[in-house]
Image (tube, rainbow, N blue to C red; front, side, top):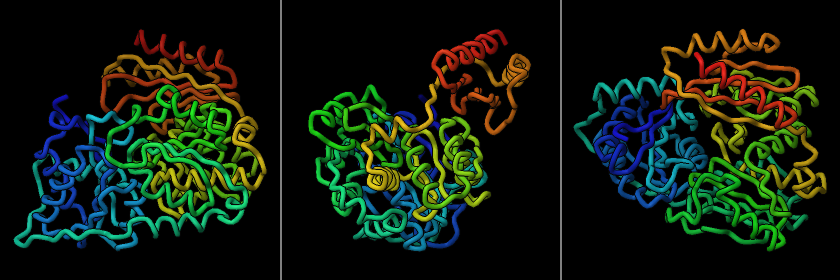
Length: 445
């Protein structure tokens, strides 16, 4: 990798290769040009490369005349809360999300405490490519934020009944995997009256398993949940904006159903619009329709989900990667909101997690990809639409075809010359059949 991977709201790369101090300085300087007056909140997810990158970011911001409010190790959703709490001009979170340890990156926040949307991200990218950086004749100062968790915890108290959860006395295993999740995760679970254990509580970036919270990577954690008699296993990615679930039997429930359980719980208390991205499971749409709630989808990406949530006034939104977004806490994917809402749902209904998951509508998901250049992509999409005349066509991100019993999504990658194919249906056989047909059509395009 010679170039970092750049999205609308940040970048990531391999430290010392595509992510160098010069890249960091240029990108942060380009971001500072797009900010209103004020200080900038700075945090990191615990990776071993974080302290050095943090120094580079702080130097770039102070050189641009910005004061820096340093939160040190903090979760990505906490950075959004801190930006609003301190009325900052924006924020920078140093994180590569679920990528392996050799990666790191930057996530950018606006003064509204959300990850910056596409239009602002494009302006930052244009500045970066033109080597335009903010400068100032006077340097800013760096000040530590002493209490990074209280404001976030207080907001979570507004969306669930802590007392009802305390009465259940849940036994919980929290897998923070030496990322930033334990900083708020431990006090949150204590406040909820939970007993249990935290794996990887020290946020030093020495991951005890690969950081993406997939079934394969969490085999050992699942075994501990089952053998330890825990009611639930909560598994975070390093910056704690994603949450995967393991039930009391040690079964990997995953990330897709994290959002679904939260959606169902939300709609039991307040019916309103629900938003997911276009590659998230249809189970959320089924739950919304069952409750008589409006449902809509956005293009893939947190910033796009938030745009749609704001447009429709959503009561809850998120992505199928375990990212729950509650507007009363903040417009950022938030594993802590996910934990609190899952426990509230179990407490209220008196169910174990296995039963709550099994009661949800059931779908199977196919994922695949085909090598295809952008030049050939549009013609291939038209061929795909012609091959599925029974599908309702929409273009939230690539081409999505909706059927009475599922959907098919085909979208070009933002970073590679490939097309990604997703198909969801009530059975794996039907999902695989539609996905395989799409691959066959695209492969001959």
